[in-house]
Length: 375
Image (cartoon, rainbow, N blue to C red; front, side):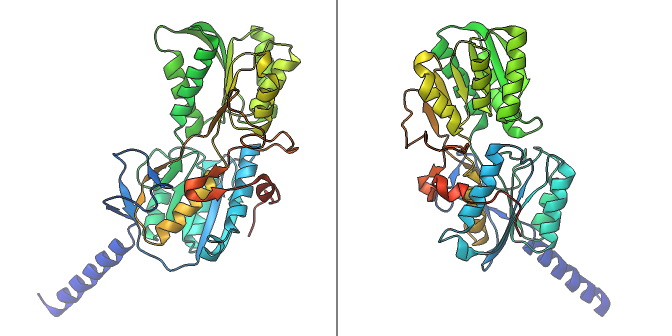
């Protein structure tokens, strides 16, 4: 090998080593850090480890849709979490941006943060796929990307979520048990189209409702997880079908109840989200027939995603998919001041505490924050 060939070989080897050093996380053996908080989804979940970085870190929240109470509360929760002792000193900069429902806009924002040298991005994905290029770019630049809530159909990034299919399954089982029959007319109020959360809850719900020997007639409408929209589409469904024996709503639950009350429809078994107003409605009317279950996709998932990103940047071993327990309350377990808050004027998602993660927000901590994008 001549001198020029040897020099080229050395340079190429150096390029390979440099590329390997910036190729994203390694797949390693578990267990991971803080397993009480960062619980692996299953015994098949793999583990990641990124190269350790010295803090403090620059972290961005790239939200998509922001047109409902849950998303507004999520943004406020992220801001409140960024100011807590134990978190604040790990953040050099924390920025929030909401891009709407356009996938390209969200991908563009994430690319911009990567190119600016941010260390981590937590995100609610607008769609479950289409993020491959951004994942490769993040890995090339050693940026930790953490989708939560609406996650991606991939195992290439660390993600945080509750079991959405199980929410659908438990809702169906609850409604069937409370109705005491395996046939009848059911209203299903779906969430924002195109998201993995909406899809997975729907799939889990139908899996139980359509299993033998059940013979339910299910009317499906789109409520966008928004009380006003849910109220309108429920009212429209009632005008056409007149009567339902049970209701499953993914969000905007209190709007669905208001539509039933406006139509003077008898209260029926219903499973819905963790809105405080929905839980107040259940507490006020369960004796009249609103036998309700309120599961909680907590806006505090953003705090766990941020905590996971910081842990990963510190070089800790992390599960690829982190499982968060589903907070549930029913008409039998509601307790004022504990899992719902009758005196709270502004609408609010009640489940916000994950004790193993040190996430214990109060309503005033969250509601005092601004929902606007921040620098």
